[in-house]
Image 1: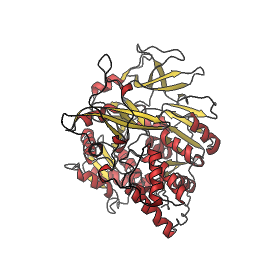
Image 2: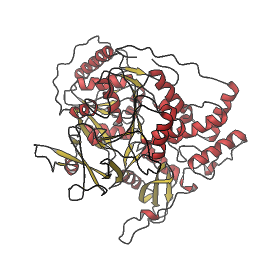
Image 3: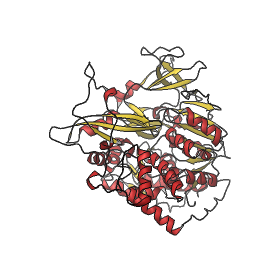
Image 4: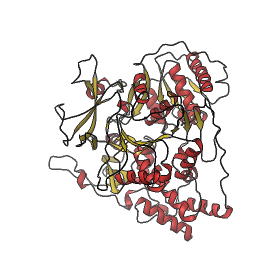
Length: 593
């Protein structure tokens, strides 16, 4: 637990250490820390040092971390012992100081003296990397005034000192901007919820109740899962969700059973600093086919324009263009792309006024609200992450065994969108799904790795010579990384029941005892779904971390049987002590500190 005075003291100490390490104001500093109290101290310290932070996900492959730090020209890296191992694996610290924030002596300096720096609203606050079409991620440079526009004097969310905001998002995901700065810049408390707790609905609900959470954001995919399996979690003063097209069925379920005081659907790209529109939901019509993204948030301009840059009438699709102080400064080291996407404002004569072309399709509804219709290009949203499919294709085509490749986001079962790669092997070579998955996991984040790999002799083409995506087949059992070479039938009642649950959840015909859930196309959200089923069927409480460590049918069966034998139960979690000056607390499934 950390109060504002402690946060101020620790962040000042780290800011001074950054200066002592030779980091100058205006530099960029990598922060490779999972959501934690240390992460919050690091973010505040980097800004106090007059620098911009570059949030990095420690779970990403080391080579990707190295590429991001190199592109950002990071002057230093702030890490903890666990993440330092990933950084060292890619030799990212060569010639670049790494400050270990969890070392006792690093923050031993007892000072509250503020670094004497002057900052401006145009100064960069952070660089957030998103998927790019060239095969390399692109860094979005977000200024301080854009963060202020997101969380201060706004209309979609009113946060004050009585609120507790949950920090549920990966620090390298732009929703974390709302969570962290929405709390700290409004004098509220911030409850840091670990990743494994977020993925377990019962544990998440217990942690948020224990912390007294009043405000939180969920990606649309996670919102759908919770509304379907544990709508009781969706309570509080303000629940926000967004990141993909919303399903009216689950919104209705949340309003009926979750009963949040306010349920708000939000939309916005990283280039417009997290949120650009909002729509508060009170009811869903029985025949609704879409959930609006609403109207612009305060101090934000949103236009829907045609191919000629002219406004479209209601009902006619066009592209979303966004303006106002929430706009990013552009893309790091990419002036041509910046000029293409951040264009002169066609309806404003103010010097330097710009609009950002999102590439998102939308239309005005009769009531003036906006309805999201999808993308114009190869970008998609999956589990809240913006993914450029061409980046995955680019990496696949670099594999020695692959001649050509196309990646699609398929939704062959309602509410379950997944990536599918269609590959054409080089002549005389074989494309093994397990090998391709393992290779991509070394080079891309887990959420960008396809669930299935379909081998084709050639990609189907249209009459004009383009890939005919409508003729690409539904992936079959053979398209997943199975355990065929060492296939062992499920043994005994527990394994047989688990295999059936795996098959139903993943849409497969069969799963062996050694079939790994993630290699068979599972992801973190499906893991949450399958654990809910497993624990309900067997009357146990298999945890998310144990499932991630051992996700085969046989391993989960051993965990189930061990719990049955021991009848182990979790001890009650201690209550978090309230204090009027406490902005940050750490929560978990078993306790808090």
